[in-house]
Image (cartoon, rainbow, N blue to C red; front, top):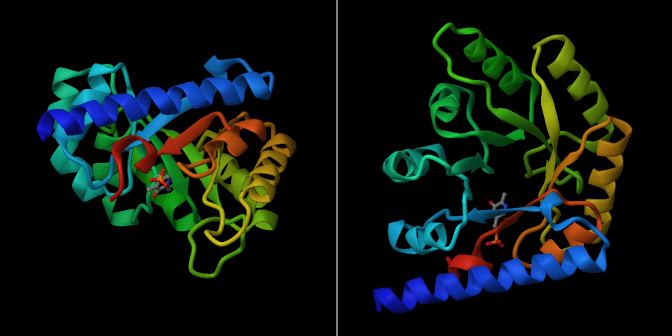
Length: 227
Ligand SMILES: *Cc1c(COP(=O)(O)O)cnc(C)c1O
């Protein structure tokens, strides 16, 4: 049973890698320009270990508490791992998040930019994380993210008011719409702001995201199975 589960992860991870390579060939892109984040939320060491054994180094989680329980021990034995926060971050969890994550994809509001800047000014805060701004490309009221027409202003505020270096943009398209127009919109906003990092594409649409310029794809169920 355990062994089957591990073999499944290994097989599916290899398939996802092959499809990413093919999508890069189709789009005439350097495969090294697309990095795979294995989204391991809800899964434990039995599924994560085989992915690490197969060479996977970037992992994504959506909750600070869950990550705190899972990752410190894995990171102690695998120092090359890189952990990405892809879920919402509450301001009162910023300090913990900074100790756990190398990259935060979900900077989505001025109050969080302020909280991050404050925390990073503390003498003992570690190296700053890489930061991406989440954009609500579908302008869905229930979804986190900066509205497309507010991104330029928010990026300027992060830089000029808070001294935060923003590396790129992230989006989660509406579940009930074709994703490609949202990926194209994110790429356009990034381009006009001189940003090169684009976090977009999940299990159902990562190939489309690669065609439109994704530099990080966040793939969960296609690697680890259903949640
Ligand atoms: C869960 C999650 C993913 C991965 O979703 P899959 O459909 O399982 O690949 C990607 N991005 C975010 C923000 C997520 O929360």
